[in-house]
Image (cartoon, rainbow, N blue to C red; front, top):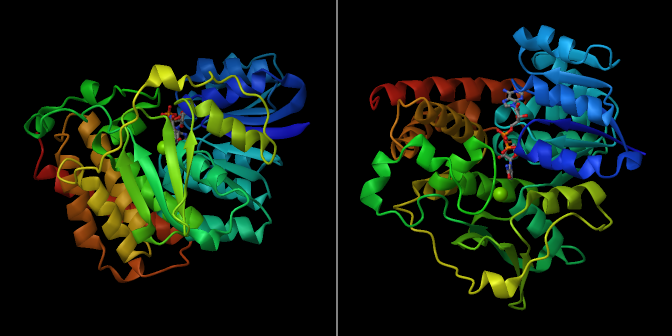
Length: 390
Ligand code: NAD
Ligand code: MG
């Protein structure tokens, strides 16, 4: 039996992971599930999967979680330290599907106990890529990509000589506002930005898809995880979202990964790796999809892509600044304090202000240093929002 834990079990990726695990109960021994405010879902899934422990991020919700688990024998815990403790419980495979930099410390804890970390939480690679990779290496642990584009690249690389790779192309749907006139973007509402044309995901990543901050994070994620040089990483807008990524080789060939936009493919690949097993994913009917389009992204529409290039050029802790400023700008957009188009202006301002900080030049950061930069960037992002506040 494979011992599995799911961090961020109540979210979109977490629920897709549970959907795969519950179909084969004899194959998995569920150790820990973690969630946020949705206690009913967390307790329901912990009971269904006979988890050892369920953890909510919110200490005030511990009594509610305890009550919901009453009589089940499943342990309940709450708070940041409890999340880390849950991730540290011995398991063979841990899904990292918390949203935001909050996923970093639990992901590191899972690696420290030697687990295979199935990484949906791209923010941890963007913020602290070298720390994550070093921790995996030091503990003989493995990181498997779950972001669909990175799973696609990983699959296209099987059996290939990394030295023969000359380019990678990450596709982007273009998000909710792909076809909107530019002038309309400033007035885009949270509800409008929260609906994705092809993928069904959590609200934050859906809004990040509309602004392309998600793709910006993914470009940096590809650099950190696979070690590609920035000039090798390209982005193409592909409205049909069936080609997830392409890897180009020195002989001119491109290997494309094609599949329906269903995260259970990438999650299942990481769950069954190195084997392939049947998954409950619809067969792709390419004739029904029809013509596949690819076009270069317009960086006026998507300034986040230019900012990602700046982050890769700066290196060090600039990813931590970028991610924290983005998370804060997104909080302010969701709260109605910022225009959609001002999120990138805020991130740009924070990056310019902080990138020269001496601590940024550090290629082997500690968690404390990352937390320090994250804190500085959030503070700056709040100040940069103040001058643009609606
Ligand atoms: P979501 O918002 O649906 O779920 C997030 C989960 O994290 C929930 O369980 C929530 O309770 C928990 N959480 C939120 N804040 C937390 C905190 N401060 N501390 C502890 N737990 C917290 O998000 P999602 O769409 O499932 O995305 C999860 C991660 O996977 C993100 O990093 C996202 O970028 C990545 N990802 C998602 C998809 C997708 O299809 N949804 C695809 C690729 C990558
Ligand atoms: Mg993705």
